[in-house]
Image (cartoon, rainbow, N blue to C red; front, side, top):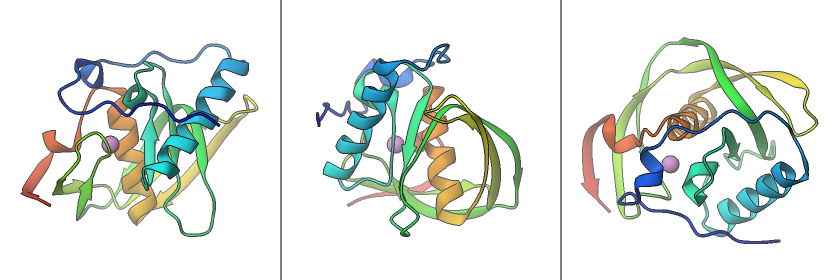
Length: 152
Ligand code: NI
């Protein structure tokens, strides 16, 4: 187990575009393990690799609904449906929450840790968390999309 340092909003790495993962090797598996440990340690519901300074298209999400964590490599949104506005926050933007519009339902294609193509349909908080983490892979923070924000 290894905890990695979570980068915060002033760090320019959060604004960079992450690269696709070409080969799922042991380093990627260790990265995913460390991302999960770091996310749980920080009480987060999701984490993207650039948040720990790694510009690779890898995300982890666990919305604590009992379904466990998902780790997705090279995730792509295939379709989105509906819209919801809810408050969200980010481990890289401590102390701030804000209302963000996100799709109610998304379908995502990605690779899992075994290198298999998987498709996930998600709604509500799960969809929101996946979209938030995928945004990180393109250098986008929730604060870019916020409708109303407040200090917490
Ligand atoms: Ni975030």
